[in-house]
Length: 102
Image (cartoon, rainbow, N blue to C red):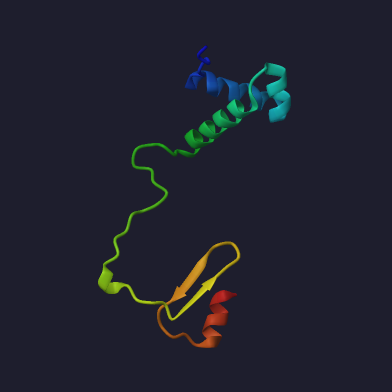
């Protein structure tokens, strides 16, 4: 048997009802007999609509092109525990580097 799909209108109404209820995801889902993952999905859709994502021309990343002749090995590369990295392609004074990292 095919599962009934929730339309966008129904999903937005579900989120509106949940928000006005003041209940947690779990409480609302149990009360309304809604699968937990469905409410989470529609809340994500709601947040994307509210933030303007998905609109034509709305990109978080801007594409760039790098020409091979400009690529060089970094003189120093610093990687943070959070996954960020800083690559310096020229020699840098140690005091200047310390002030950059602060």
